[in-house]
Image (cartoon, rainbow, N blue to C red; front, side, top):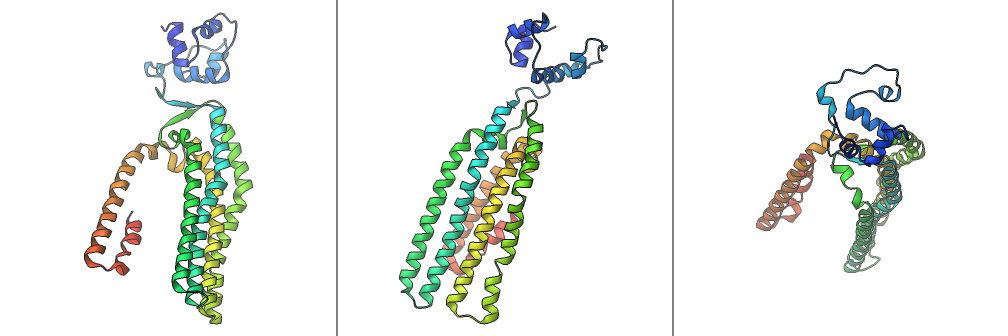
Length: 298
């Protein structure tokens, strides 16, 4: 009972396209056939084969399954994956810089404690270098975030992908697992081995300088491991986002707004409580316990 204009609007094509289909001047592409199959509640075989009998269809099937749902084309999916792939090493480098800055701070403080430089100079140099590393990392995060900004809806809104996208994603996931699976293994091994320098210093009874150096090496090894984790996670994560799996499933997205609101209020209350307790008691050496406790509770 629909006019050509009504069907064309639902399929997001021109009226002339529908007219050509009816007069057998052209045939719909595969994606339109899938769309009509869903729209009319019939199989694609029924649409393509003239010899099949009409199928029994309930009235509810004559409506689009997800009205107003955003569609992600093959081109958009490939562009998003390419951007994430390009952003992964940059984000990983930014995280590496944050941990590297902490390692530098520990090292300079150790040099000051060992008497190689004045304590004020060591602490100041370490803090300055830490701030430089963090500033550079934040710059990387902001710049990379801008490049992915127009695809933010993929992580927060429900959508559907066009024909062929899901198959492409399955193949790409297997390729990424083969390509980046070693990153995960090496990262885990680095995290385990990072404790070795500290344990050796403890066993050998090394002086404070070597102890501080071992802690710096530990942080550097962890930084390298995290670098690998981020690259692996961002590439595999792009597949999960487009397939709406795990943290990006439809169920999770329904609760994301509520969770975000609760999280925002929670951390504001925790921060206010920490500052109030700290300023009233002036026991800053004890009040830091608020943060690990709040993190575990969250």
